[in-house]
Image (cartoon, rainbow, N blue to C red):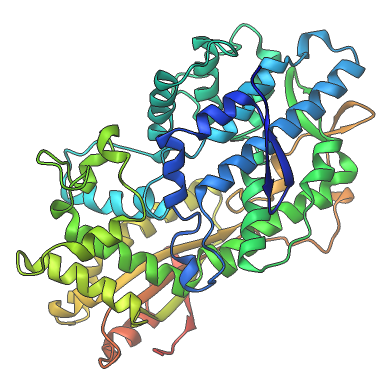
Length: 482
């Protein structure tokens, strides 16, 4: 008889793992996550932030089981036959949580949000790609290599994949049982971002970063219920729980402000990205293979992508410097990281939209900002300000957005609440007047790529802080270059 296994997790304590989850964990595809840092360059600011996607995935699986069992118990107590959750469905949810991050690349979001978009600008033939795409491919690889039919079916595997990424043409699973589509709010909730993935990484990241937080997901799990709202069933919370949920969204804001978007952590991420862009064509996966694939093309070939982890930096440092100047540049950048000769934040402008625009106008203004941020536009801006072109390579502009998870709107707007087991609206009068009235702030940062013994161009810094556009007001927040 197959036995469950118990592991000790620093966040959730003893975690009991289903035998099929153990089989998944004991595969090369899952073990690969040990070599991918959860927070990318954050460990260069917070030394404790060296945890990986491996333990986060196990924690997410555990919480998926906790929430689904809590909902199962309440549904059974209330006799809601159409909503009943089976033990096999709970197992699928645990497997979904376990597998949701299998497709991540080096330094987590650095590959899909920083490296790949830049390399795709140069090579338009590269396909559109997200790490979720590779999570689904990794799931296929895993279930082709392990025995699973003693617990789940092929149809269940498709359900697991839909829990992770919503198909473009809508969910196929439970299409004829729309009342059970609340399952898709458990792991990747695109309605209001309340899901077990975030619950784990909020708690785990705060713990490893040494930051405190007030949100308690254990309490939220105990209070969650499936309630009907305007003909659709959603995971819902008592109206009295709104402040604890706001703490969750505030934790998100705090982590972005103090860690994920920390100026030095972002500087390291930019440097790693620059090094990978320089070395891209010279890196081959699997390493040393005669017909190996370069980094940018490996994302669509799973045999190659299996080898694409944080170890890529070691591979860059092993490349022969005398073969190509780009390799030498890549190695110099990585050497600078180890010598703490990092890119410097030399300017930061807070952006406020002009004329208090409505939502449609804001979309136009965002498009204008995105256009402004393109490298060719920055070059054009420098020419207009009579700045020499050779300075362009030494500067990098970074778009930074802080919010509570719902752009410029209150994150509580999309949360589903109940009172006496019935759908209930949370009115403005019921929310504390001490909560913020603005929920978003956008910045443009200017980084200097020069070395310690060099100084940035003062004219560029002055012009950057004096920027003017018809669609926004730019307010300098950082003028120093140290």
